[in-house]
Length: 108
Length: 225
Image: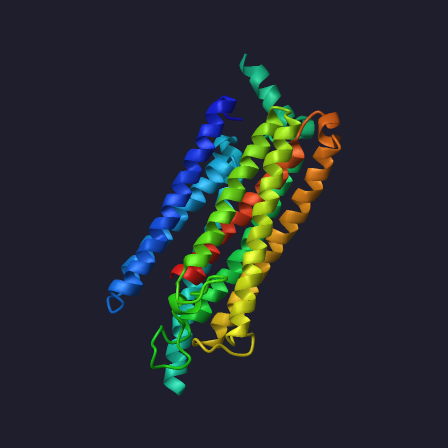
């Protein structure tokens, strides 16, 4: 449980809301800027930015909205650690996807 | 002093009390959400693998991966090409409904029944708006020819994965709206008040925020990357 008073936690919720809204607007603006102003330039650096910003949004939703920041540390760890498997899953399957493409091109 | 601490610690883990200082229902909701995370992660990782197995976006290659700015450019009642405008609206609806859900939980802590009813009704409204927007988006894309069989914008896999993943997400939102409506009625008839706590609102809140959390990544995969 948090030590915040009722009023403080209401304030906090709206603050997180503004952060999420601002980050979303920023993402959309960056995507549209790339689409209209520099469609020829590579997009990989923008994609890295999108992934980082989405992770930040996920952090705010989990820690504040889902209250995970104020739970016991042991509980937070039991919830967070299983997601480490996903790191392997993402790397392995994206790697595999690229390999499928090269096979496809090889046999075409 | 030290022995007391040890005894207490033992009791905590012997079923005497919750070791995480969280009720049974809340921790079980969390564990359900972990398993659901893996369902969604499986779908999104398949999306990534299938996407990388297709040629990257290139207008000259017929089955290359489509550009989201070309696919998602329709706004209801407005003619013209407005990329990502409508999905921004949908994202904001979901973020705001998450905020109203937190407010409902907070009013529940204060045992303020009318406050819970007010904020919960806004949350239900936000959920319905989101599902309705998704229905518009789906019917528009189907009308344009993006179905499970083919995709005029490029790789067929894009449309198939889009309907599969946003469909699974929309199904979660719909279930959330139903559960929240049930909680609204329970609150209205004073069931939680008589129980002495509004913990059910907290559990549904966890589920609802999870739906918002998943949308962050669906939005990332389909609309931004």
